[in-house]
Image (cartoon, rainbow, N blue to C red; front, side):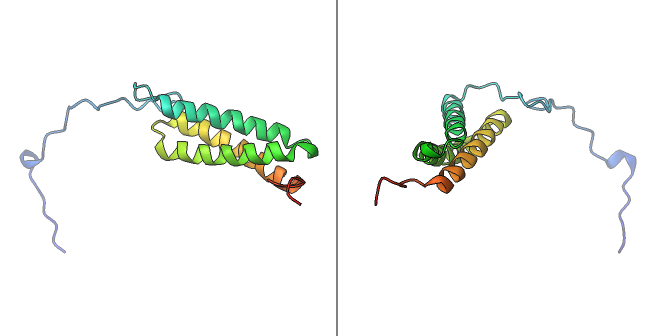
Amino acid sequence: MAQTVRSAGSRPAPSRVAHPRPATGSLFATDGRPHPLQETLMVVTGVLGVLAFVTAMFHSLHLISSWAGLAGILTGLYGQYISRTTWERFGLIMGIGAAAVGFYLGMAHGGLFGGVIT
């Protein structure tokens, strides 16, 4: 195949337009706008994840751990769907992970309805 060689005068000039936001690479980098719904979902997912994880360590609290884990997983997944920043996604993934561990251990210890419905 033939290649076209352009002279130095026909090349486009490098762009000197500033980028809309600097790339910092920080976990705390945001877009500078408030996201109250996303941040609320992140906090709720974290609280439910911690609750599910802690109560999963006790066999008799399997109802709390399984329901809190399920609610934390669903809340976190919706939060991931609408999240805007890396910080929100990081917090949601940590909460979803804790909620999932609590949910699975709660299911292993008796499940969502274990002992309530016979």
